[in-house]
Length: 256
Image 1: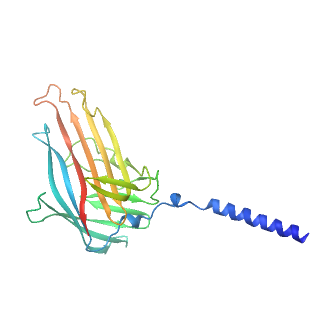
Image 2: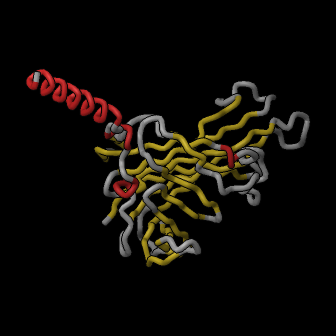
Image 3: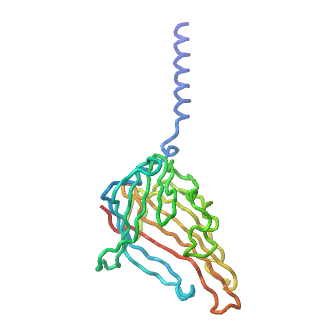
């Protein structure tokens, strides 16, 4: 009898252990800590090459302007919520890096256990939000109002920017660009929508919104792409069709 009770206890113990372990989230469900992809510290710098798409001649000519940009973490401070934040100085120079650096503004970011908040050019975005795992979604432009890009861009692309849903499509994976390989990269798709692109019906309206960020483990932001523009056919109007908007492709070339 005692032996029988002993085996019943053992069986119950094993069953409870299995149930408990099955309730615990897997590493994939728990996600990857945000801090792994945002190693912020005073003195850290990342230098990028940037190709900027601009529309000149009243929107009738597309040009690419290229330059080098550097982010340098200047100092840390507590924001109005008492959270540790970092002030980042942004500087630019020519692609040959033959001219001195020129100041191009400052911005700041705040990283917590649950999110990375990024405030640049008066746009506050939640770039990352825990848990970092495949299929994760969040409202990254929650703090933006309608039409935050006007001025200078008087278009309809940002009418509902506050509703863009950021998504992590897959687990961290290798990413290769311009002959540089990164092993652990989180890709965050912010928006991917278009109408009549490529423009196959010149007499019809067209637009494109595409934005993605890529963060490498122990480095930070290594790649950024954002293209937002609209095409007005201007049928019967003087000058013909035109486009309003911008595009930017930014990739890391060095860091400390």
